[in-house]
Image (cartoon, rainbow, N blue to C red; front, side, top):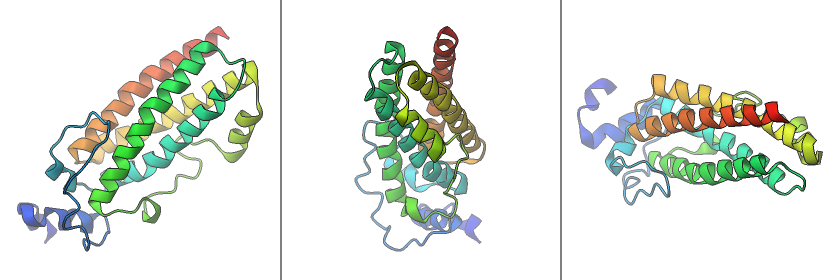
Length: 202
């Protein structure tokens, strides 16, 4: 029954919300004034209403994933005696992922989805997420040890993000989500190469 509604623009949003297990109530004007912040996504606002479970999973999982990456970067940037190449990389990660978080949060708001109430969220330590012990070790480390822990942890973190982004490309339908997923794969793959080169030189 839902398939027939996809051809009707006036009911596309409700259909997408039903597919994602959300209530369409209170979202009739959610598409108005969509702001993608500093994201490079340029798709028209009306396309943002078209999303499926894979799109929602990517966004609800990638937001906390990005937030942890920023926490890791902040920890490193607050330390002394860190390799200048790694300081530059940490700032680059922070500058890129902060605006992406804002963009994804705006998408969820437009979709009528709560990031805290998603049945598909909750990565625990999957997706390359650092454990609490690993985060504590990074926070406590100094100098070369902090540099090494950051690089090793962020390589694993980026690898998890790339896997999540590929899953979105394979199963998602929202053009903005697909564009961001490809950006994650391209940008973080390049950063992994850089981080491995720095690790090998330490």
